[in-house]
Image (cartoon, rainbow, N blue to C red; front, side, top):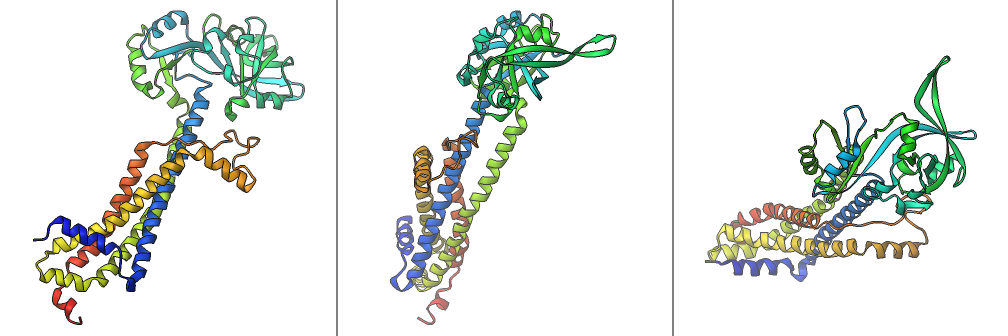
Length: 416
C-alpha cells in the first residue's frame, strides 16, 4: 500500500518535467512567478493604503477629539462639573470645552465662509495637537477679550492676510434693530497660522478664544460641547456607553467615526476594490497551474498506468498531482510573502531611490498634502492574502488531479 511519503516523493519529482518536455517546467516557473508577483503586489498595495488611511486619520484627529458631548439644544451648561465627571473615567485621557459655529471672514474685497472654533488654550492640548502644527504663533497667544484669531495657512493666503493683520468676522447670530435683523460684526487680529495638512482645516477653519466666541455667537456662559480624548480611538463605542452611565442628564454623544463616516467608508471601499482587482493576478496564475497540471497528466499517463497496475488507488494518484500543484502554489506564495513584506517594510527607502533614479517625485509637496508614500504592514492582511493564494492553488489542482485518477491503465499502455 502506498504511503504519503511515497506520494510526496512522486509529487515533488513530477514538479520538474523531463528535458524533452521542458515547456512544462517553463509553465510551472511562470505560474510560480505569477503567484509570487500577485501576492507581493497585494501585500504592498494594501500596506500602502493602510499607511495612507492611518496618516489621514492621524491628521484629522490631530485637529479634533475622539468624542464630543453636547446638550439637546447644542448648548452645554456647567461644563466644568461635567469635566470633573468624565476626566476621572479610566479610558479618558483629556477633555476640553469648545464652540463650533459658522461665519464669514472678510479682508478687503475677499470674503470666505469658514468654520469658527472657540477653544480654551488651557485645555485644548488635552484633546488636540494643534500647537505642533503652528507655522507662526501658538495657542497661548489667544487671550480673552483681545479678539485674537488663528487661521489655516490656505485660508490666510486666500484672504491675503498674515500675522498682525486684521479680519472682520460676520456672525449669523444677528441683533434686531428698527431696520430688521443686523448681523453681528467683530474685528479680529491674526495672531497665528497653522498647517494641519488637511484641506478641510487649512482652507476653512479659524480658531478664537472660547470667551470671545461666547460673546460673538451669544452663548452667554454656555459652550457648544465638551471634547474628549480616549486611550484607544477604536474603543469609542464601548467608552461612550461607560460615560453615559455616569451622566446625570440626557446628552448627545458624537464620536470621530460619525463625524467623518463617509470619508473613512470611501477609503475602506477603495481598499476592498483594490484587493479584488489585484487578487485577479493570483487567479490568473492559478489558471496557469491548471494548464500546467493538465499537460503533466498527459505527459505522465504511462507512469500513472504503471502505478495503477502496481496497486496504486485513484486517491493515491490524485494525491500525487495535488501535491505537485501545491508545491508550485506554496513556492509562489512564500516568495510573494517574503518579497511583499520586505517591500512594505522598506517602502520609505525604495520610493526615494526610484524618485532619484527617475528624476521626479511621485507626490510633490507643493501639490499633495502627503508628500511621502506611507506604509503600514498589517500581518492579518499578509496571512489572509497568503491563505487566499493557497486556496486558489488547491482548487486549481483538483480538476487535473481528478483527471489523473480516472486514467485507465489499459488505454494508457495501449500504444506504449
